[in-house]
Image (cartoon, rainbow, N blue to C red):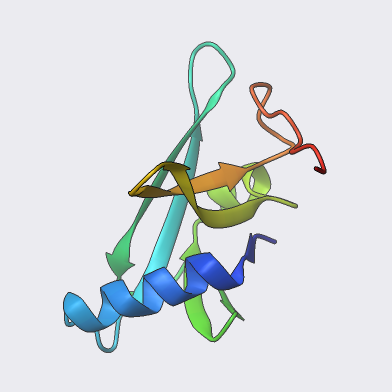
Length: 104
């Protein structure tokens, strides 16, 4: 299943508080594009009967079975890509566009 870094978890919790998402879970979605790359989406939602539900980093996550296959062994992080510009990124070995981070 997907891993959530401490930085991503902190930002998700902040977003939940600011967005008044009490009682909702974080839905993470992944779909395969025509070029075989993966498109990602996130938002707060209610669980549906078919969903897979997990708790990681104290966050309730819901994922459809199809998305779960695409997100196997993936990691969600929240990083500063440019000075002052933070964003969520998916590090997913199932995505042909994935390049593992290099250790510095």
